[in-house]
Length: 85
Ligand SMILES: [Zn+2]
Image (cartoon, rainbow, N blue to C red; front, side, top):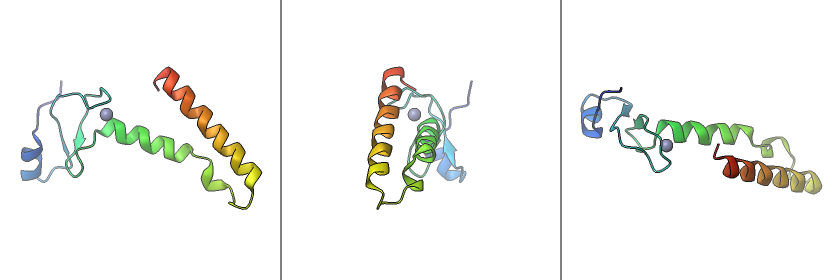
């Protein structure tokens, strides 16, 4: 069990996180950032998706490779939605 810390309390104490015990819109009951009210778990998942993106390694001029990358990314998204990863 976590201790409940309201956002106001966390702000007063200059904490980075607060904790309400309420699930976020995606069902995590985790700490949330004071600055943007985002759930830590959501942020972590979004960041791991971004780092897995293949776009960064591809030159825009290579259209065929880029198209393949977009297709790959779409498949990943589909898989994630199906299995709710
Ligand atoms: Zn969340």
